[in-house]
Image 1 (cartoon, rainbow, N blue to C red):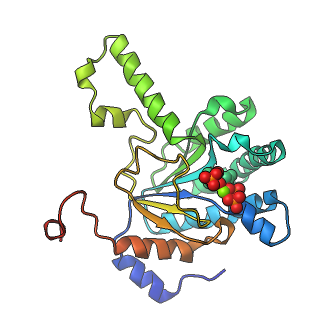
Image 2: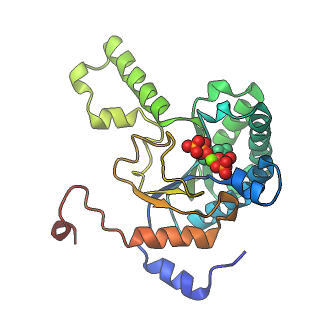
Length: 251
Ligand code: IPE
Ligand code: IPE
Ligand code: MG
């Protein structure tokens, strides 16, 4: 793997860094196929790209990194592949949690956990409790996550508050709704990266990406590393974010 040169490090210091980055980690299956291997070989290889992304985010003081690991639609894949992904999730939680904790990373998992087996849910909860007070990097893993699920869950929660008489219908506004969605306590999503060449959102952070910058790369997930992350951040740094205003108002 290439490593960042001294010049790269100097230039990182001058970049406008995103506070919150999300990544759709796509392309594992194709990466493996290109090598004549089973798709699951690609998922296993993808773990190193996760480590590299966490290292990059931490060392560049990105506040939050949200990784899409398994969508609510991925259950439709062949049973063998789903089983390997669940096992891999457990293995990686076991092998990485100590290092993450030592490095000041707070780990949280977002998604409908009710579909996971009790052992996995316990591992997730233990990891969340262990790292709850860490502040160097907020690492969020989206597993059995769907953007529509997130929105529907938020709507249900507000509806319940209304029916319990805690709030009035008129109290529901964008910020009240936002507070009920996943990671409401994190900074707004600045940059959404998708590897693997597809240019779609695949039901990821639908509510949260309203004003995110999108970065698509053909790099397949197992080939993603700190230099590729740096390319995305460079690209982000050159964007002008107008939030509806005109250029002269934001420069
Ligand atoms: C992303 O890679 C990982 C998961 C969805 C779990 P894919 O498995 O979708 O890889 P491709 O897109 O088929 O190459
Ligand atoms: C999106 O990738 C989900 C994850 C990366 C976890 P998919 O490979 O499932 O997306 P589609 O099916 O190509 O839209
Ligand atoms: Mg895919």
